[in-house]
Length: 246
Image (cartoon, rainbow, N blue to C red; front, side, top):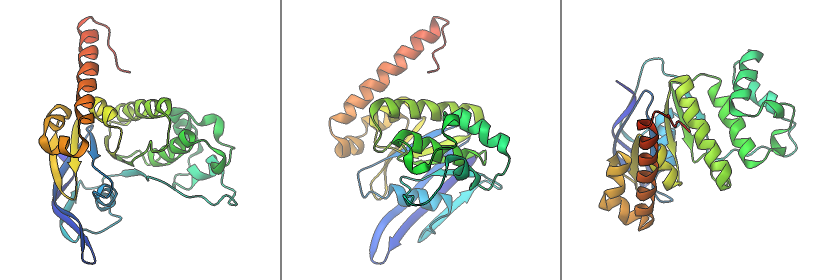
């Protein structure tokens, strides 16, 4: 059973067609990543899926009672606005302080609760956004390029956190990402988008697709090679009885 799926979804803004004929589905516990060039409709697709924008055609089917947590690509906060991390979490609509503390601890921002949101580093800010999204205990966590602007250690740390969250909450994750090597290592299903779904499937299948390689060039082969290396490395550890979950 899919938590969410689309059938023939298209989006037009005026005379401009942004998306057409998009069919996809996300199942529970699945990590699905959308990749594509700038202007390919990735953010628009996420907005349609969470209900923030209506499709011009086609349908979006969501599981009854589904709870969705959303982390936007960027969020501008006025420098003059006094907004601590603790207050930011309170804006989620959940008032249980114990839940706030638990989530803050889980995402690694418990020592930042009294700090102003505008004083946080890029990685800390993204973790604060994630914490608020997790307070609804989502069935589906949606992230729009959550590591944009972060350095490589922060990127790696954030994606490890997402994998832990998926396990802890037993939720699905749908994200847009430009980190191709991370996509190939962490995703169960990859959707290559360029106004329409060019190709989709497992990381291995998508990396080998001509449509994907036409968009991303030889770097796509490098991403696939890294995916295979990571996959084989984990498999070797598993066979040796030493589970590698990091």
